Length: 199
Image 1 (cartoon, rainbow, N blue to C red):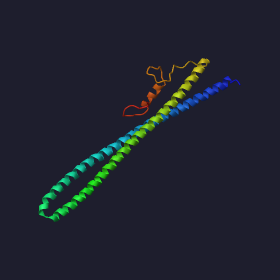
Image 2: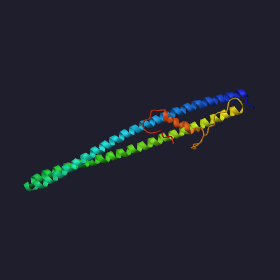
Image 3: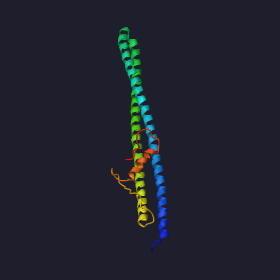
Image 4: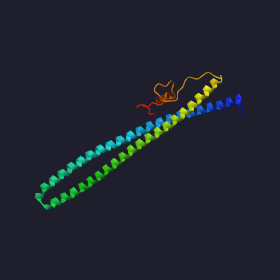
């Protein structure tokens, strides 16, 4: 069954509309994922700063406790000459300080565990965004290549001019490569930290 020129034209028009819609959707998705990545990086940085402040406070607190325990032990030795009653009281104080130190050590372990969770969340978030961007990039390349081939067929049939030469690989010296379009993603949002990673 022969396809009429009108049916062929309608098919091409539908393909072109579909291409434009998918291109807009993909561009919107890439912009959204870039913004999401930026927000996640900011959140991770804030969490890491919080953990670092807690660690510094913990180090300071630990040193204070160690100094206080040393002073208390020295005082216990001195008071030993004054009587066993005072020694007993000081021993109780040392036990109390020791319990406090154990609580501080437990807090330290919790902080380290929290930091590990933060780092894992950061890596998983980056990997997820990277995979989503790579998927969008692959889809964009396929749609762009289909549209280019359609225009070449139209030009070969004499219905329109030949399009500009386009290449669909990532070679360094490729002419008018579709991959260079993706570099424009860096200009879509006001990202202050570094460049967009779409590799």
